[in-house]
Image (cartoon, rainbow, N blue to C red; front, top):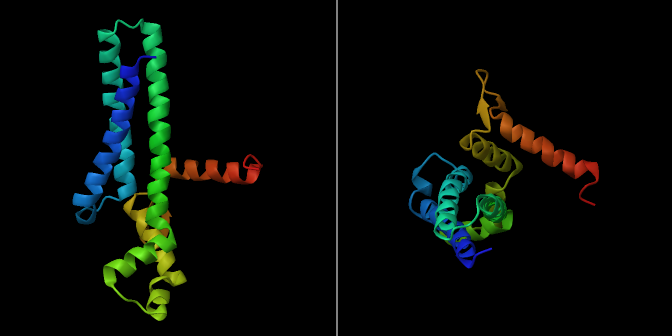
Length: 171
């Protein structure tokens, strides 16, 4: 595999991460879209420049078509797997309680233990998670005020993870 392909692949990955960082830094607080959905959109859209760049480099380097197909499949797998790992790293940093407490202490200054308990009561935790799921379009409110699933893809992903967890594949 040509070094130029690898450099381009690394640049595509770094560009996606930089785009996500920029989006969260400059637009994240002023939008109704969740940072997780934004990252998924950036990753999906980033597959197109990956394809176009791979084809352009392959054309310039006179790479045979079959080899170019394998190079693109390799690039597609590496790009999406690295950014999948980045997605979960970012998601953990957004949701981990210790990190959230540290960030809130920094943002709000000093908080007492009672104030922190109020922020992290079970009711508040459930409400925060439901709000995040609503913001991502995974759940929605029905006419009676209850919550229901709104996205079959995420439900299938949840079932897949549940299957993996309880099937013994993770032992």
